[in-house]
Length: 160
Image 1 (cartoon, rainbow, N blue to C red):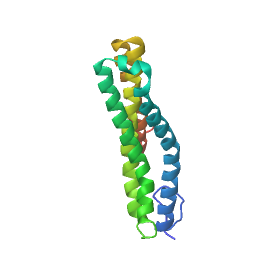
Image 2 (image 1 turned 135 degrees about the horizontal axis):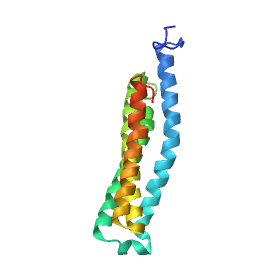
Image 3 (image 1 turned 45 degrees about the horizontal axis):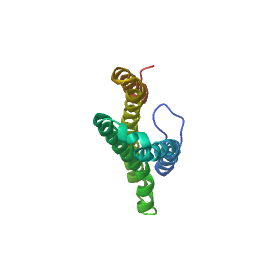
Image 4 (image 1 turned 60 degrees about the vertical axis):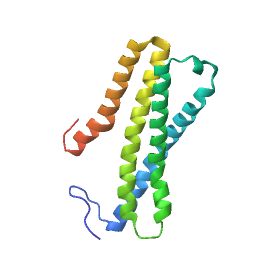
């Protein structure tokens, strides 16, 4: 057995590490897949609501962008499962883990964009463009701070 990463007491083989990384990633994806699928499904029903036709063109364009981001997030967050199925028993777990990690990052970024867009769309519809700009800014900054900056600082060894 090889020693684990520096600063840890893990004693695991490379295969054990890859299996652990895959299991950890798939658990994370299970959580976020449910949310993104729910969001996408909800968004897909909106054009069939009576008031949707009353939305001004800019809101409909925003809606289409949000739907596109949500669908793309769904694709990215489900891609690791498809990759695993295609490469199953082909001794390519390292490729699967690396690819799945990249898809998860892309999917989370797209989900953040979709959620920010939904925030803008809702606030614009309910409270107007000023409230929409403020709420969208808060949502966007929050996603960047919590999903990107804070983990990046921790990764670089800074206490945040």
